[in-house]
Image (cartoon, rainbow, N blue to C red; front, top):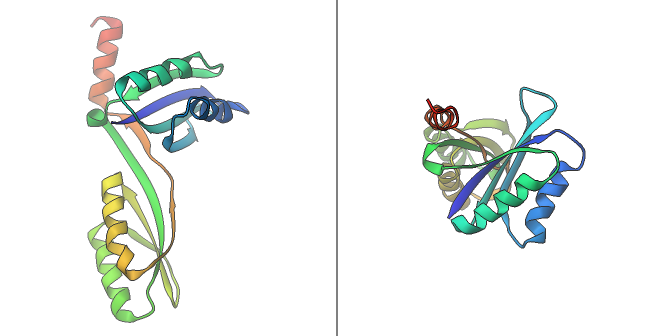
Length: 171
């Protein structure tokens, strides 16, 4: 089962190494890891996607919570979470017919053309994993030269936060 873990940490040297080290030392694979500064420059948010049963993820979260510089650890429920990934694809398109077909698919998927060359077209697509995977599958027959993905950025929907605060404050 896929889990999205949100970890709020102090923005300090070595925190990423400690967090990723915790996963590797226990033999857990990270599917995706993104890190970015929050509105407070002293705090960063890590979004970690892992696969495993609830028991394993619960164990990982407890271990994360014990790390120095970790402020908060949350398992974001997939059904109440907004998540997006960004992907760049460099696609071979040596003739105008292929270029037109690719541009039509780019439009259908609400992607963006960010570079046009004589032999290649570079596209940016954002969305869910499923959307990006479907787009990549459609681009394969044209010839994908290069792919770069950012990993998932995620946050809980407002409904989830309201429910959590109601529990914490007994409202």
